Length: 218
Image 1 (cartoon, rainbow, N blue to C red):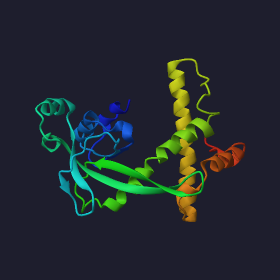
Image 2: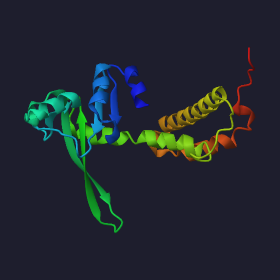
Image 3: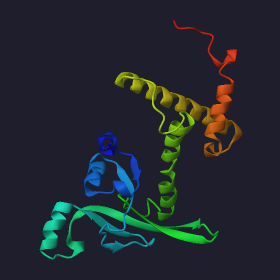
Image 4: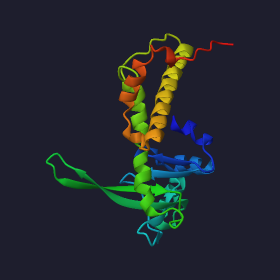
């Protein structure tokens, strides 16, 4: 389904994705649309070191699988197989285990943002971490606006289902707009304001006369 989105990308866009989205075909289409990508790497991806960069990352490539198979049959070295140029960035993230001890997990991402001076390596852990915000948004719609992901929509036809989902998304955006307005007024990060509490506060005021514009339809 994500592949329907790649043609909508363009210059200035950066697609950030988990391990399941890294493939030659997807990367080719993202780059072909004019966008860049930052994608996590599975452990079995072949990433030959073509050039070590001053910041500790290195340049590599994501090979075209068809070309790769032909060239491997000729026993050519992995570094000689062509593909899409990428930069490989590795970093560790510390976490707490079940016993309260500290463990670290190594993350590796590939990016088409090749220039290590224009795009410093220090920015990438935060960029990849921000990807999880979409998971929070999906959870807000599924669980906090509805009774949960297993809840059945009330509508009985495709058009009405679309309308119901569109209504949920409108409510979600309205609550997020309230959060942003409150954050700007108090000077705090919007991420620190609870979606659930904002929703509850809005619900308490729905019956107020001031909650709706006195102007009717024209």
